[in-house]
Length: 119
Image 1 (cartoon, rainbow, N blue to C red):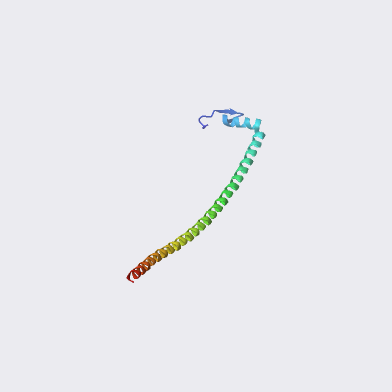
Image 2: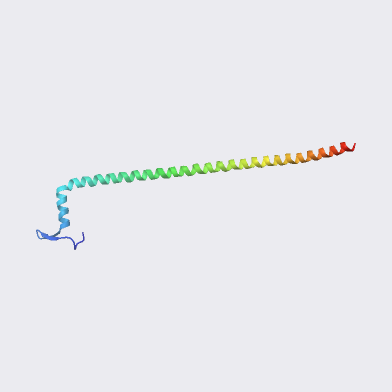
């Protein structure tokens, strides 16, 4: 409520607003109970904020652990890929050598056949 919306009245020579009068009555009737509730709510709020902080710290720790694990796996995969590439290159070279040997063998057999035919 704004000041222009509040009803103003005099009580024992003092100018009081309806809002402050309601607060006074509320405090007389429920004062100690409301203070207890406010205290409990503040305690619960602090507890929730503390637990939130603990959970945020745990999330950060897990995030860090996951990043380390991902880096380790990435490194391991790269090493294995490099090993596979080297292995494939070696086998390709062996296949090329075998193919060359077959060509050489066929040439030798042709030459042998020609020599036999001449005799």
